[in-house]
Amino acid sequence: MNKKLYPVILLFASVFVLASCVSEEDDIFDQSAAERLNAVSKVYIDRLCDSPGGWVMEYYPYTDNEDMNTGVGYLIMNRFHKNQSVYTLMKNKATRNTVMNDSSAWEVITDMGPVLTYNSYNKCLGRFTDPYDDYILTPGTYDDESGKGLQGDYEFVMVDVPEGGNHIMLKGKKRGVYQRLTRVPVGTDFEQYIDDMNKFRNAYFQSGARWEYTIKDHGNAYRMDRVNGGRPRVYPEGKDSTAYGWYNPYLITYYNNQYHFRFKDTVMVDGNQMEQEYAYDADADKFIGVSNAENTLEGPVPVTYFLENLTAKIARRWEMSKAEADLSDEVKSLREAVVSDFKAIGCTFNSFSFMIKGGKTVLRVQFRQKTSSYSWNYVFDMTQEGDNVVLKYVEGEDETSSKNIEMVPSLKTFVDMLSQTFTVSANTTRFNPSKLVLTSSDSKYRLLFTLYN
Image 1 (tube, rainbow, N blue to C red):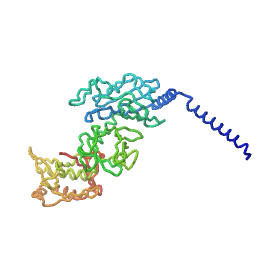
Image 2 (tube, rainbow, N blue to C red; image 1 turned 180 degrees about the vertical axis):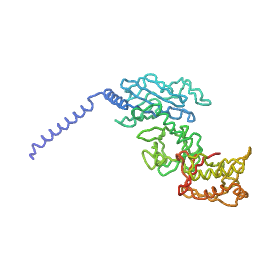
Image 3 (cartoon, rainbow, N blue to C red; image 1 turned 90 degrees about the horizontal axis):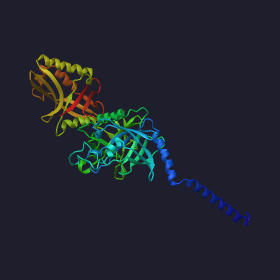
Image 4 (cartoon, rainbow, N blue to C red; image 1 turned 120 degrees about the vertical axis):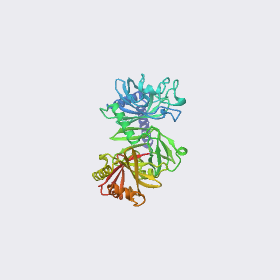
């Protein structure tokens, strides 16, 4: 190359690069910051309106008292319209479980970023943001919130608003609490949606449940109790729940044809972020982690729960159901024979129950004669093998057993039937083990037992 031409080429190259840079800067800065925010606001307005069925907001009001009912979450249904009106509905503790709905104005404003604001009074949001509203359900010294209110938000920074996404993430402008909007299908009846979520919660996380649930996360096991009230306590398995536990509110929603359980907050344990959201797998009868399928939320193991309640410090009894629908035909026939034999000796058969009596596992046979109640006890060995319970009648352990069987011959047939291996399974779901099914290995004998104190 001619050495005299080389500097000229370099000069033209430098001018070309500089011209390119200037052009790029013109593309980036041809709008002011305000104009760019306004453009984003218009996009976000379209995305909020791009859900004809509406959105369900997982709403958590702020509270400085973790023991108050205000520490739980609430579902608020929203349907945004392009005429800048929004229809809202909720039905929860804050409304005495009656429907509260309202229409108000809304917009996406620019305030150090796009902000969703309910900019005219909305009764649903106002229930949590009115500083002069007294929350009717809070107890004790917190029974009057007048002048403070529930400290909720009605303006939300729009943190993540993906195009066509199932979720929009918001953050309360004043309190900093994260709230999530989840898309609901077209034609969704708002009240029915909330009723369905409550029905599911009450079926799978029963009020007053004596049992605990198990969370498996990053190879570690945790227990969870007090779930139905909305503020479950989570603690490491084998450790004291008070000393090592923490509270984390949650809500149930439904999308992608599955019920979802989502905690309000993420929790870090030993450098790992615990699963925040789980989807219910009906076939497996457990919740599967959304971010990691190896993380699960499960109900008690049926056979373990069956045996634990017989041997607990406060022992309980498992009573066999009398309903025909709960028993196989063979079991119904055996029970009918027992009823008939008791009637033949002037008695009325009442129930079969497994329980602990005198330190032994017994089948208690309860009946009435005129106005008095009586019971006979038949001793069983009861052991666990995997998901099975192995029953074996110990003949002669009860002093009156042979005499009783002579009086009611069908009892011997029934006791002999029980002396075998049964698989223990949930009647409806492992999340509600108050009713358990015992099924023989040949499926011939099926018995349903209900737990009682």
